[in-house]
Amino acid sequence: MPARVPSALRSLTHWALASGATLLVVSGCGLGRGGAVADEGARQGDPLDSPVLPTHLAVPAPPAVTASAPRLWVALGARLGGSQPLVLQAASGSLTLITASGQQHQGRELVLRWSPEPLDPPLRFSRRVLGPFASYESAEEAARRWQQQGVRTVIAHPADWEVWAAATAPPPAGELPQPAARLVELELRQRLRPELQLASGSVPLQGPLQLQAPGGLRWRGGVFSGPFRLQPDAYGSWTLVEQVPLERYLLGVVPHEIGAGSPPAALAAQAVLARTWALRNQERYSVDGYHLCSDTQCQVYGDPGHAGSAVRQAVAATRLQLLSWQGKPIHAVYHATNGGVAAGFEEMWSGAPLPYLQPRLDGVAALQQRFLIPLAPGQVGSLLATRTGLYGASHPRFRWSRSLDAAQIAAAVRPLAPNLGTPTRLAVLERGPSGRVLALQIQGTGDGPGNSVVLRRDAIRRHLRSLPSTLFLVSPEGTGRWRFQGGGFGHGAGLSQAGAIELADQGWSAARILAHYYPGTGLVNLDQLSPGPAESAP
Image (cartoon, rainbow, N blue to C red; front, side, top):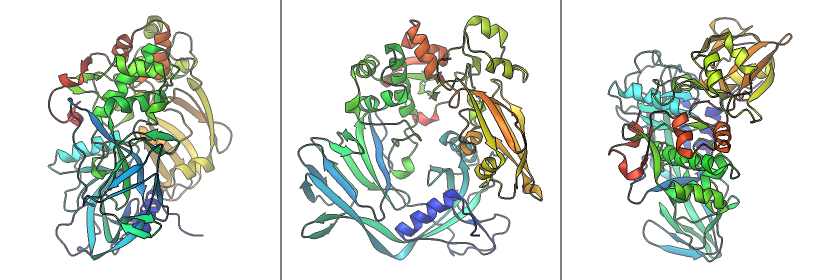
Protein backbone atom coordinates (compact mmCIF):
# COMPACT_ATOMS: atom_id res chain seq x y z
CA MET A 1 0.00 0.00 0.00
CA PRO A 2 1.53 3.39 -0.91
CA ALA A 3 2.45 5.75 1.87
CA ARG A 4 -0.05 8.50 2.58
CA VAL A 5 1.17 12.00 1.77
CA PRO A 6 -0.19 14.93 3.82
CA SER A 7 -2.51 17.25 1.89
CA ALA A 8 -0.26 20.31 2.19
CA LEU A 9 2.67 18.36 0.78
CA ARG A 10 0.52 17.04 -2.07
CA SER A 11 -0.41 20.63 -2.95
CA LEU A 12 3.20 21.78 -2.76
CA THR A 13 4.35 18.79 -4.79
CA HIS A 14 1.77 19.62 -7.47
CA TRP A 15 3.10 23.19 -7.54
CA ALA A 16 6.67 21.89 -7.75
CA LEU A 17 5.88 19.70 -10.74
CA ALA A 18 4.09 22.57 -12.48
CA SER A 19 6.74 25.19 -11.85
CA GLY A 20 9.89 23.12 -11.91
CA ALA A 21 10.73 23.26 -8.23
CA THR A 22 12.68 20.56 -6.43
CA LEU A 23 11.85 19.66 -2.84
CA LEU A 24 15.15 18.93 -1.14
CA VAL A 25 15.00 16.31 1.60
CA VAL A 26 17.75 16.66 4.18
CA SER A 27 19.51 13.43 5.13
CA GLY A 28 17.99 11.87 8.20
CA CYS A 29 14.73 13.79 7.89
CA GLY A 30 11.27 12.81 6.77
CA LEU A 31 8.76 14.52 4.56
CA GLY A 32 6.32 16.73 6.45
CA ARG A 33 3.62 19.24 5.76
CA GLY A 34 4.93 21.89 3.39
CA GLY A 35 7.96 20.29 1.77
CA ALA A 36 11.36 18.97 2.72
CA VAL A 37 11.72 19.01 6.46
CA ALA A 38 14.75 18.96 8.74
CA ASP A 39 14.17 18.27 12.39
CA GLU A 40 15.93 20.98 14.40
CA GLY A 41 17.78 18.59 16.62
CA ALA A 42 18.77 16.11 13.92
CA ARG A 43 19.88 18.51 11.22
CA GLN A 44 23.55 18.15 10.25
CA GLY A 45 25.11 20.89 8.12
CA ASP A 46 23.48 22.87 5.32
CA PRO A 47 22.82 20.93 2.09
CA LEU A 48 22.32 24.19 0.25
CA ASP A 49 25.76 25.36 1.37
CA SER A 50 24.67 28.96 1.88
CA PRO A 51 24.41 30.97 5.12
CA VAL A 52 21.57 33.20 3.89
CA LEU A 53 18.86 32.26 1.42
CA PRO A 54 15.54 33.98 0.71
CA THR A 55 12.42 32.38 2.14
CA HIS A 56 10.36 32.72 -1.05
CA LEU A 57 10.04 34.50 -4.38
CA ALA A 58 9.97 38.21 -3.64
CA VAL A 59 6.78 39.91 -4.83
CA PRO A 60 6.13 43.65 -4.39
CA ALA A 61 3.53 44.29 -1.71
CA PRO A 62 0.28 45.95 -2.78
CA PRO A 63 -0.12 49.64 -1.98
CA ALA A 64 -1.69 50.53 1.34
CA VAL A 65 -5.37 51.39 1.26
CA THR A 66 -5.76 55.16 1.61
CA ALA A 67 -8.67 57.16 3.02
CA SER A 68 -8.74 59.54 0.07
CA ALA A 69 -9.24 56.86 -2.60
CA PRO A 70 -9.62 53.47 -0.90
CA ARG A 71 -8.96 50.64 -3.33
CA LEU A 72 -8.37 46.95 -2.70
CA TRP A 73 -6.34 44.50 -4.74
CA VAL A 74 -8.50 41.37 -4.74
CA ALA A 75 -7.47 38.04 -6.26
CA LEU A 76 -10.17 36.80 -8.61
CA GLY A 77 -8.04 33.81 -9.62
CA ALA A 78 -5.00 32.52 -7.74
CA ARG A 79 -2.37 29.85 -8.46
CA LEU A 80 -2.81 30.20 -12.20
CA GLY A 81 -0.43 28.20 -14.36
CA GLY A 82 0.23 24.65 -15.43
CA SER A 83 -1.48 23.03 -18.40
CA GLN A 84 -4.73 24.96 -18.25
CA PRO A 85 -4.86 28.11 -20.43
CA LEU A 86 -6.15 31.38 -19.06
CA VAL A 87 -9.08 32.64 -21.14
CA LEU A 88 -9.91 36.34 -20.70
CA GLN A 89 -13.17 37.42 -22.28
CA ALA A 90 -14.69 40.89 -22.52
CA ALA A 91 -18.33 41.28 -21.48
CA SER A 92 -18.62 43.86 -24.24
CA GLY A 93 -16.16 45.72 -26.40
CA SER A 94 -12.55 44.57 -26.25
CA LEU A 95 -9.76 43.94 -23.76
CA THR A 96 -6.38 45.65 -23.72
CA LEU A 97 -3.41 43.77 -22.30
CA ILE A 98 -0.35 45.89 -21.49
CA THR A 99 3.01 44.27 -20.72
CA ALA A 100 5.63 45.59 -18.32
CA SER A 101 7.55 46.96 -21.30
CA GLY A 102 4.49 48.85 -22.59
CA GLN A 103 3.47 46.55 -25.46
CA GLN A 104 -0.28 46.37 -26.01
CA HIS A 105 -2.49 43.57 -27.30
CA GLN A 106 -6.23 43.90 -27.89
CA GLY A 107 -9.08 41.53 -28.56
CA ARG A 108 -12.54 40.46 -27.52
CA GLU A 109 -10.97 37.28 -26.15
CA LEU A 110 -7.36 36.77 -25.11
CA VAL A 111 -5.95 33.29 -24.49
CA LEU A 112 -2.79 32.86 -22.45
CA ARG A 113 -0.78 29.71 -21.97
CA TRP A 114 2.08 29.05 -19.61
CA SER A 115 5.58 28.34 -20.84
CA PRO A 116 8.34 27.06 -18.51
CA GLU A 117 11.37 29.36 -18.48
CA PRO A 118 14.57 27.61 -17.30
CA LEU A 119 16.51 29.30 -14.52
CA ASP A 120 20.27 29.03 -14.65
CA PRO A 121 21.36 29.01 -11.94
CA PRO A 122 18.27 27.74 -10.12
CA LEU A 123 16.70 29.85 -7.40
CA ARG A 124 17.10 28.39 -3.94
CA PHE A 125 14.96 29.05 -0.89
CA SER A 126 15.17 28.03 2.73
CA ARG A 127 12.79 28.93 5.50
CA ARG A 128 11.81 27.97 9.02
CA VAL A 129 8.09 27.23 9.11
CA LEU A 130 5.44 27.20 11.81
CA GLY A 131 2.13 25.53 11.09
CA PRO A 132 -0.11 24.49 9.55
CA PHE A 133 -2.73 26.63 11.27
CA ALA A 134 -6.48 26.28 11.00
CA SER A 135 -6.93 30.00 10.33
CA TYR A 136 -5.13 33.20 9.47
CA GLU A 137 -5.98 34.51 12.93
CA SER A 138 -4.08 31.71 14.67
CA ALA A 139 -1.14 32.14 12.29
CA GLU A 140 -1.15 35.87 12.99
CA GLU A 141 -0.93 35.28 16.73
CA ALA A 142 1.97 32.84 16.30
CA ALA A 143 3.74 35.38 14.07
CA ARG A 144 3.23 38.10 16.68
CA ARG A 145 4.83 35.97 19.38
CA TRP A 146 7.77 35.10 17.17
CA GLN A 147 8.23 38.76 16.26
CA GLN A 148 8.62 39.56 19.95
CA GLN A 149 11.93 37.68 19.73
CA GLY A 150 13.08 40.06 17.00
CA VAL A 151 12.29 37.60 14.20
CA ARG A 152 10.95 38.97 10.92
CA THR A 153 8.03 36.80 9.84
CA VAL A 154 5.78 36.30 6.82
CA ILE A 155 2.31 34.76 6.85
CA ALA A 156 1.60 32.65 3.78
CA HIS A 157 -1.02 30.22 2.50
CA PRO A 158 0.70 27.63 0.27
CA ALA A 159 -1.96 25.02 1.12
CA ASP A 160 -2.71 25.86 4.75
CA TRP A 161 -1.85 28.94 6.78
CA GLU A 162 1.82 29.02 7.80
CA VAL A 163 4.32 31.44 9.34
CA TRP A 164 7.71 31.73 7.63
CA ALA A 165 11.01 33.12 8.86
CA ALA A 166 14.62 32.91 7.74
CA ALA A 167 16.22 29.50 8.18
CA THR A 168 18.67 31.08 10.62
CA ALA A 169 15.88 32.43 12.85
CA PRO A 170 15.77 31.09 16.41
CA PRO A 171 12.92 28.72 17.18
CA PRO A 172 9.90 30.27 18.89
CA ALA A 173 10.16 30.60 22.64
CA GLY A 174 7.45 29.35 24.94
CA GLU A 175 4.46 27.17 24.22
CA LEU A 176 2.85 27.50 20.82
CA PRO A 177 -0.29 25.66 19.66
CA GLN A 178 1.36 23.74 16.81
CA PRO A 179 4.33 21.42 16.14
CA ALA A 180 7.85 22.75 16.53
CA ALA A 181 9.32 24.91 13.79
CA ARG A 182 10.70 22.93 10.88
CA LEU A 183 13.04 23.70 8.01
CA VAL A 184 11.75 23.72 4.43
CA GLU A 185 14.20 23.92 1.52
CA LEU A 186 13.28 24.36 -2.13
CA GLU A 187 15.06 24.73 -5.43
CA LEU A 188 13.28 26.38 -8.36
CA ARG A 189 14.70 25.36 -11.72
CA GLN A 190 12.15 27.07 -13.92
CA ARG A 191 9.47 29.73 -13.77
CA LEU A 192 6.20 29.97 -15.62
CA ARG A 193 5.91 32.75 -18.19
CA PRO A 194 2.61 33.70 -19.86
CA GLU A 195 2.37 33.61 -23.63
CA LEU A 196 -0.41 35.17 -25.69
CA GLN A 197 -1.87 32.75 -28.23
CA LEU A 198 -2.41 34.30 -31.67
CA ALA A 199 -3.30 32.81 -35.04
CA SER A 200 0.28 33.53 -36.13
CA GLY A 201 1.82 31.86 -33.07
CA SER A 202 2.72 32.59 -29.44
CA VAL A 203 3.92 35.94 -28.10
CA PRO A 204 5.94 35.87 -24.84
CA LEU A 205 4.66 38.40 -22.30
CA GLN A 206 6.73 40.27 -19.75
CA GLY A 207 4.87 40.69 -16.47
CA PRO A 208 3.33 42.01 -14.44
CA LEU A 209 0.56 42.64 -16.96
CA GLN A 210 -2.11 45.32 -16.89
CA LEU A 211 -5.56 44.45 -18.22
CA GLN A 212 -8.15 47.04 -19.14
CA ALA A 213 -11.76 46.03 -19.73
CA PRO A 214 -13.96 49.11 -20.35
CA GLY A 215 -16.98 46.88 -20.96
CA GLY A 216 -16.18 44.50 -18.10
CA LEU A 217 -14.38 41.16 -17.82
CA ARG A 218 -16.35 37.93 -17.71
CA TRP A 219 -15.00 35.75 -14.95
CA ARG A 220 -16.51 32.67 -13.34
CA GLY A 221 -20.12 33.57 -13.93
CA GLY A 222 -19.83 37.29 -13.23
CA VAL A 223 -18.69 40.53 -14.79
CA PHE A 224 -16.01 42.63 -13.12
CA SER A 225 -15.00 46.18 -13.99
CA GLY A 226 -11.34 46.26 -13.02
CA PRO A 227 -8.80 47.49 -13.82
CA PHE A 228 -6.88 44.24 -13.51
CA ARG A 229 -3.36 42.92 -13.08
CA LEU A 230 -1.87 39.54 -13.94
CA GLN A 231 1.10 39.13 -11.66
CA PRO A 232 3.40 36.43 -10.21
CA ASP A 233 3.01 35.24 -6.63
CA ALA A 234 5.40 33.95 -3.98
CA TYR A 235 5.25 30.36 -5.29
CA GLY A 236 6.03 30.81 -8.97
CA SER A 237 2.43 30.75 -10.19
CA TRP A 238 0.28 33.73 -11.23
CA THR A 239 -2.69 35.71 -9.91
CA LEU A 240 -5.46 37.64 -11.66
CA VAL A 241 -6.07 40.68 -9.44
CA GLU A 242 -8.85 43.24 -9.63
CA GLN A 243 -8.03 46.72 -8.35
CA VAL A 244 -11.49 47.46 -7.00
CA PRO A 245 -12.72 50.57 -5.15
CA LEU A 246 -13.69 49.73 -1.58
CA GLU A 247 -17.37 50.65 -1.89
CA ARG A 248 -17.79 48.65 -5.10
CA TYR A 249 -16.10 45.70 -3.40
CA LEU A 250 -18.80 45.77 -0.71
CA LEU A 251 -21.52 45.42 -3.34
CA GLY A 252 -19.95 42.09 -4.25
CA VAL A 253 -19.53 40.97 -0.62
CA VAL A 254 -22.61 41.92 1.39
CA PRO A 255 -25.20 39.80 -0.49
CA HIS A 256 -22.92 36.74 -0.36
CA GLU A 257 -22.21 37.06 3.34
CA ILE A 258 -25.64 37.79 4.87
CA GLY A 259 -28.14 37.45 2.03
CA ALA A 260 -29.66 40.18 -0.09
CA GLY A 261 -33.12 39.64 1.42
CA SER A 262 -32.07 40.60 4.95
CA PRO A 263 -33.77 43.62 6.57
CA PRO A 264 -32.17 47.03 5.91
CA ALA A 265 -30.58 47.44 9.36
CA ALA A 266 -28.92 44.02 9.15
CA LEU A 267 -27.63 44.78 5.65
CA ALA A 268 -26.22 48.10 6.87
CA ALA A 269 -24.52 46.42 9.84
CA GLN A 270 -23.03 43.82 7.52
CA ALA A 271 -21.76 46.56 5.19
CA VAL A 272 -19.95 48.26 8.08
CA LEU A 273 -18.42 44.96 9.19
CA ALA A 274 -17.34 43.90 5.69
CA ARG A 275 -15.67 47.28 5.21
CA THR A 276 -13.98 47.09 8.62
CA TRP A 277 -12.85 43.51 8.06
CA ALA A 278 -11.32 44.38 4.69
CA LEU A 279 -9.35 47.31 6.12
CA ARG A 280 -8.17 45.30 9.14
CA ASN A 281 -7.06 42.39 6.93
CA GLN A 282 -5.39 44.23 4.07
CA GLU A 283 -2.07 42.50 4.89
CA ARG A 284 -3.59 39.03 4.61
CA TYR A 285 -2.04 38.13 1.23
CA SER A 286 0.72 40.72 1.00
CA VAL A 287 3.29 37.94 0.50
CA ASP A 288 1.58 37.26 -2.85
CA GLY A 289 1.27 40.92 -3.86
CA TYR A 290 -2.42 41.57 -3.18
CA HIS A 291 -4.67 42.40 -0.24
CA LEU A 292 -7.48 39.86 -0.18
CA CYS A 293 -8.75 36.71 -1.85
CA SER A 294 -12.33 36.33 -3.08
CA ASP A 295 -13.28 33.04 -1.40
CA THR A 296 -14.03 31.83 2.12
CA GLN A 297 -10.46 32.41 3.32
CA CYS A 298 -11.43 36.08 3.15
CA GLN A 299 -14.91 37.45 2.39
CA VAL A 300 -16.76 35.89 -0.53
CA TYR A 301 -16.66 38.44 -3.36
CA GLY A 302 -18.82 38.09 -6.44
CA ASP A 303 -20.10 40.23 -9.29
CA PRO A 304 -20.97 43.67 -7.80
CA GLY A 305 -23.45 44.14 -10.62
CA HIS A 306 -25.69 41.49 -9.07
CA ALA A 307 -26.29 43.63 -5.98
CA GLY A 308 -29.93 44.70 -5.66
CA SER A 309 -31.31 48.02 -4.53
CA ALA A 310 -31.45 47.07 -0.84
CA VAL A 311 -27.76 46.14 -0.77
CA ARG A 312 -26.83 49.29 -2.68
CA GLN A 313 -28.80 51.42 -0.22
CA ALA A 314 -27.09 49.75 2.76
CA VAL A 315 -23.61 50.33 1.32
CA ALA A 316 -24.44 53.93 0.38
CA ALA A 317 -26.01 54.69 3.78
CA THR A 318 -22.83 53.56 5.57
CA ARG A 319 -20.35 54.93 3.05
CA LEU A 320 -16.76 54.74 4.40
CA GLN A 321 -18.02 53.93 7.92
CA LEU A 322 -16.32 51.29 10.02
CA LEU A 323 -15.92 50.15 13.61
CA SER A 324 -12.81 51.25 15.49
CA TRP A 325 -11.11 50.61 18.80
CA GLN A 326 -8.38 52.99 19.94
CA GLY A 327 -8.32 54.61 16.50
CA LYS A 328 -7.82 51.36 14.54
CA PRO A 329 -10.25 49.09 12.67
CA ILE A 330 -11.38 46.25 14.90
CA HIS A 331 -11.24 42.50 14.37
CA ALA A 332 -14.66 42.59 12.69
CA VAL A 333 -15.26 38.85 12.75
CA TYR A 334 -18.79 37.58 12.21
CA HIS A 335 -20.56 34.30 11.58
CA ALA A 336 -23.93 32.74 10.71
CA THR A 337 -25.32 32.03 14.20
CA ASN A 338 -23.77 31.70 17.65
CA GLY A 339 -26.31 29.23 19.04
CA GLY A 340 -27.43 31.75 21.65
CA VAL A 341 -24.07 32.54 23.25
CA ALA A 342 -21.26 34.66 21.80
CA ALA A 343 -17.68 33.39 21.99
CA GLY A 344 -14.72 35.36 23.21
CA PHE A 345 -11.91 35.95 20.72
CA GLU A 346 -9.52 33.85 22.81
CA GLU A 347 -11.92 30.88 22.70
CA MET A 348 -11.59 30.59 18.94
CA TRP A 349 -8.02 31.65 18.27
CA SER A 350 -4.81 31.65 20.26
CA GLY A 351 -4.69 35.39 20.90
CA ALA A 352 -5.24 37.52 23.95
CA PRO A 353 -8.83 38.45 24.92
CA LEU A 354 -10.23 41.48 23.15
CA PRO A 355 -12.40 43.94 25.12
CA TYR A 356 -15.05 44.15 22.39
CA LEU A 357 -15.23 40.38 21.67
CA GLN A 358 -16.24 38.96 25.01
CA PRO A 359 -18.32 35.84 25.75
CA ARG A 360 -21.92 36.74 26.53
CA LEU A 361 -25.38 35.27 26.31
CA ASP A 362 -27.10 36.49 23.17
CA GLY A 363 -30.70 36.74 24.27
CA VAL A 364 -33.25 38.49 26.44
CA ALA A 365 -32.37 39.78 29.91
CA ALA A 366 -34.14 36.95 31.73
CA LEU A 367 -31.95 34.36 30.07
CA GLN A 368 -28.85 36.41 30.78
CA GLN A 369 -29.67 36.00 34.46
CA ARG A 370 -30.34 32.29 34.05
CA PHE A 371 -27.18 31.50 32.11
CA LEU A 372 -24.38 33.42 33.77
CA ILE A 373 -21.03 33.71 32.00
CA PRO A 374 -18.75 31.83 32.42
CA LEU A 375 -21.08 28.92 31.83
CA ALA A 376 -20.67 26.01 34.22
CA PRO A 377 -19.98 22.76 32.33
CA GLY A 378 -23.33 21.40 33.50
CA GLN A 379 -25.19 24.35 31.94
CA VAL A 380 -24.13 23.63 28.37
CA GLY A 381 -26.77 20.96 27.97
CA SER A 382 -29.46 23.23 29.44
CA LEU A 383 -28.47 26.02 27.06
CA LEU A 384 -28.60 23.67 24.07
CA ALA A 385 -32.10 22.65 25.16
CA THR A 386 -33.22 26.29 25.08
CA ARG A 387 -34.43 28.24 22.04
CA THR A 388 -37.07 30.75 23.13
CA GLY A 389 -35.59 34.12 24.02
CA LEU A 390 -32.24 33.51 22.31
CA TYR A 391 -31.46 35.63 19.25
CA GLY A 392 -31.16 33.95 15.87
CA ALA A 393 -33.04 30.78 16.87
CA SER A 394 -34.71 30.54 13.45
CA HIS A 395 -31.43 29.60 11.75
CA PRO A 396 -31.45 25.94 10.62
CA ARG A 397 -28.16 25.25 12.44
CA PHE A 398 -29.05 27.08 15.64
CA ARG A 399 -29.30 23.54 17.00
CA TRP A 400 -27.77 20.56 15.26
CA SER A 401 -26.77 16.93 15.67
CA ARG A 402 -24.00 14.97 13.99
CA SER A 403 -22.86 11.35 14.23
CA LEU A 404 -19.27 10.34 13.45
CA ASP A 405 -17.80 6.86 13.48
CA ALA A 406 -14.26 5.77 14.29
CA ALA A 407 -13.22 5.47 10.65
CA GLN A 408 -14.36 9.05 9.87
CA ILE A 409 -12.56 10.47 12.87
CA ALA A 410 -9.36 8.52 12.19
CA ALA A 411 -9.28 9.75 8.60
CA ALA A 412 -9.88 13.35 9.71
CA VAL A 413 -6.97 13.45 12.15
CA ARG A 414 -4.54 11.15 10.32
CA PRO A 415 -2.31 14.08 9.17
CA LEU A 416 -1.82 14.97 12.85
CA ALA A 417 -1.77 11.48 14.34
CA PRO A 418 -0.75 8.82 11.80
CA ASN A 419 -0.20 6.30 14.63
CA LEU A 420 -3.54 6.91 16.34
CA GLY A 421 -5.04 3.60 15.30
CA THR A 422 -8.79 3.18 15.72
CA PRO A 423 -10.36 5.88 17.92
CA THR A 424 -11.78 4.44 21.14
CA ARG A 425 -12.47 7.49 23.30
CA LEU A 426 -13.35 11.16 22.82
CA ALA A 427 -13.10 13.49 25.79
CA VAL A 428 -13.60 17.23 26.25
CA LEU A 429 -10.58 18.42 28.25
CA GLU A 430 -11.42 22.12 28.45
CA ARG A 431 -14.28 24.50 27.78
CA GLY A 432 -14.26 28.27 27.42
CA PRO A 433 -16.50 30.77 29.22
CA SER A 434 -19.18 30.45 26.52
CA GLY A 435 -19.22 26.67 26.87
CA ARG A 436 -17.32 26.04 23.65
CA VAL A 437 -14.83 23.21 23.49
CA LEU A 438 -11.25 24.46 23.69
CA ALA A 439 -9.57 21.04 23.76
CA LEU A 440 -10.89 17.72 22.47
CA GLN A 441 -8.85 14.59 23.09
CA ILE A 442 -9.07 11.58 20.78
CA GLN A 443 -7.54 8.32 21.98
CA GLY A 444 -6.93 5.31 19.78
CA THR A 445 -5.63 1.78 19.72
CA GLY A 446 -2.20 2.61 18.29
CA ASP A 447 1.02 1.72 20.08
CA GLY A 448 3.23 4.33 21.71
CA PRO A 449 2.77 8.04 22.39
CA GLY A 450 1.10 8.65 19.03
CA ASN A 451 -2.12 6.92 20.07
CA SER A 452 -3.67 10.15 21.32
CA VAL A 453 -4.17 13.60 19.81
CA VAL A 454 -5.66 16.81 21.21
CA LEU A 455 -7.47 19.22 18.88
CA ARG A 456 -7.58 22.80 20.15
CA ARG A 457 -9.85 25.73 19.31
CA ASP A 458 -10.26 26.28 15.55
CA ALA A 459 -8.34 23.10 14.78
CA ILE A 460 -11.36 21.12 16.01
CA ARG A 461 -13.56 22.25 13.12
CA ARG A 462 -10.66 22.28 10.70
CA HIS A 463 -10.26 18.53 11.10
CA LEU A 464 -13.80 17.48 12.06
CA ARG A 465 -15.28 19.47 9.22
CA SER A 466 -18.84 18.20 9.57
CA LEU A 467 -19.19 19.97 12.95
CA PRO A 468 -20.87 23.36 12.43
CA SER A 469 -19.35 24.82 15.63
CA THR A 470 -17.38 24.00 18.77
CA LEU A 471 -20.41 24.54 21.03
CA PHE A 472 -21.33 20.90 21.58
CA LEU A 473 -21.66 17.91 23.84
CA VAL A 474 -20.21 14.59 22.71
CA SER A 475 -21.19 11.15 23.93
CA PRO A 476 -20.75 7.52 22.79
CA GLU A 477 -23.44 6.18 20.48
CA GLY A 478 -22.70 2.50 20.44
CA THR A 479 -19.34 0.92 19.71
CA GLY A 480 -17.06 3.05 17.55
CA ARG A 481 -19.53 5.91 17.06
CA TRP A 482 -20.11 9.25 18.79
CA ARG A 483 -23.00 11.71 18.82
CA PHE A 484 -22.32 15.45 18.79
CA GLN A 485 -25.20 17.65 19.98
CA GLY A 486 -24.47 21.30 19.39
CA GLY A 487 -25.54 24.79 18.56
CA GLY A 488 -24.47 27.52 16.19
CA PHE A 489 -22.75 27.71 12.84
CA GLY A 490 -19.31 29.29 12.66
CA HIS A 491 -16.78 30.44 15.23
CA GLY A 492 -19.34 32.33 17.31
CA ALA A 493 -17.34 35.54 17.89
CA GLY A 494 -18.71 38.94 16.97
CA LEU A 495 -21.92 39.47 15.07
CA SER A 496 -24.38 36.62 14.66
CA GLN A 497 -25.96 37.22 11.26
CA ALA A 498 -29.10 35.34 12.27
CA GLY A 499 -29.24 37.37 15.48
CA ALA A 500 -28.76 40.63 13.58
CA ILE A 501 -31.59 39.74 11.22
CA GLU A 502 -33.93 39.01 14.14
CA LEU A 503 -32.98 42.20 15.97
CA ALA A 504 -33.44 44.24 12.79
CA ASP A 505 -36.90 42.73 12.40
CA GLN A 506 -37.62 43.91 15.96
CA GLY A 507 -36.75 47.47 14.93
CA TRP A 508 -33.15 47.74 16.07
CA SER A 509 -30.97 50.14 14.07
CA ALA A 510 -27.68 49.10 12.50
CA ALA A 511 -25.78 51.18 15.06
CA ARG A 512 -27.58 49.48 17.96
CA ILE A 513 -26.94 46.02 16.50
CA LEU A 514 -23.23 46.78 16.12
CA ALA A 515 -23.00 48.18 19.65
CA HIS A 516 -24.67 45.01 20.94
CA TYR A 517 -22.18 42.66 19.29
CA TYR A 518 -19.05 44.86 19.62
CA PRO A 519 -19.52 46.83 22.87
CA GLY A 520 -17.23 49.78 23.40
CA THR A 521 -16.31 50.25 19.74
CA GLY A 522 -16.91 53.45 17.81
CA LEU A 523 -18.60 53.96 14.44
CA VAL A 524 -16.26 56.31 12.56
CA ASN A 525 -15.42 57.38 9.03
CA LEU A 526 -12.35 55.97 7.34
CA ASP A 527 -10.52 59.30 7.44
CA GLN A 528 -10.90 59.42 11.25
CA LEU A 529 -8.65 56.41 11.85
CA SER A 530 -5.28 56.91 13.48
CA PRO A 531 -2.27 56.65 11.15
CA GLY A 532 -0.29 53.44 11.11
CA PRO A 533 -0.78 49.85 9.99
CA ALA A 534 -4.36 48.65 10.30
CA GLU A 535 -3.21 45.17 11.34
CA SER A 536 -1.63 46.61 14.50
CA ALA A 537 -5.10 47.09 15.96
CA PRO A 538 -5.96 45.08 19.07
